[in-house]
Length: 328
Image 1 (cartoon, rainbow, N blue to C red):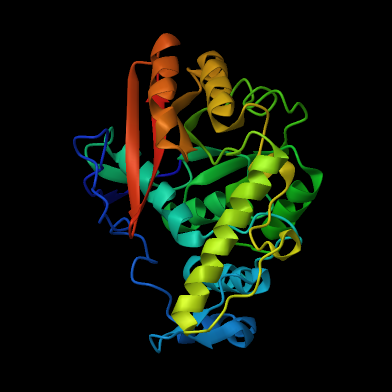
Image 2 (spheres, rainbow, N blue to C red):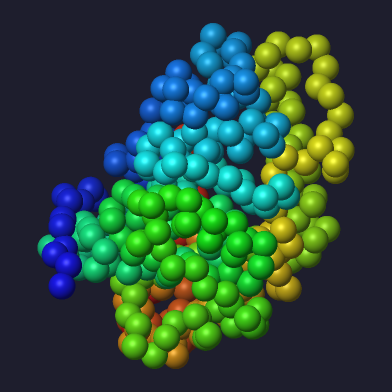
């Protein structure tokens, strides 16, 4: 049996009473909380150097409106901080910001610590289920390389599964800690993935946010236009270039960005299905992008008989994100 190592846990913000305000920062153990050390990142991943620009502040940065630059930064971060040999994703697949994903992992660590006398359990006896692993395998990478946890990652997309498998095969540190599985039925979340004799300390998920492809495209366009305005102000340019659909940087396949009924319907389906696996998963968790959905989610969790429900908030500057957690 693998021995469980422990780390001292920090206070976890749960529900609204203990949650941080809008000035909240990233988790104290998040290695990205003080920004990007571009020189060190370029040393770890020389490809990044071609994408480095000087911001108006004089600091080194990248152009976040360029997909290739964001991808290079992600590769550098994952190689520099998490010990990977390489990281890559196919064109058109989701390239998520690393710092916010790391905060979810650290939040999960605090959740586990609450039932482990205030210490974070580490080591490969702690097993997590990464629902919607994606081509990037970002959560499993950060969780396994930060805490030594073991993961099963599931996805319905063949290209994403091929990409994640390539990441496992090309990174010896990741290979013993991540098993990639295909979900053959897109109507199911846990069924077909969790085996009869398996037990997980937690599940995690970054669900599709939008209800349709059109809504996803509109949201991405709004986000990129915001980056364009920020770039214009940051670089003191006279006029921003028009942003069109073919310039969208925030990649993602349909199953990564939208599903029928959107985020709320997906999470409610997850809650209903979790009842069947309550003896095999200690904590079910899921990101929630829209705070307006929280009340309906809590109502569903209570309806299906969960004994505990938590809302854990995470701060990145002025942005507040959150995930929900429930157990039976």
